[in-house]
Length: 89
Image 1 (cartoon, rainbow, N blue to C red):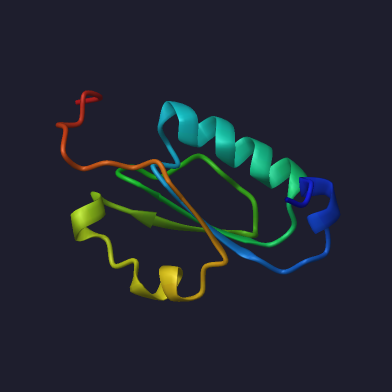
Image 2 (cartoon, rainbow, N blue to C red; image 1 turned 90 degrees about the vertical axis):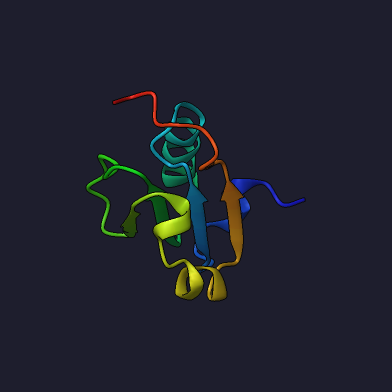
């Protein structure tokens, strides 16, 4: 497996579901620091991220249209869930 630093300059699209959750925030921060490429972040709420490489899809997983994002994805980190109620409410 390639080290993240060896992926610099490679144009990849990474999709992260659950990007605003505890693990998602940590993962997204690390990915943005170490990987070049495009990112699609999916979460129930808008994720605080000002990076121009990021596209955000907001909504519950069953309601978000992921077809375009997944058809172009090179890597998917699926950390989201929709089976439990949102405890942030």
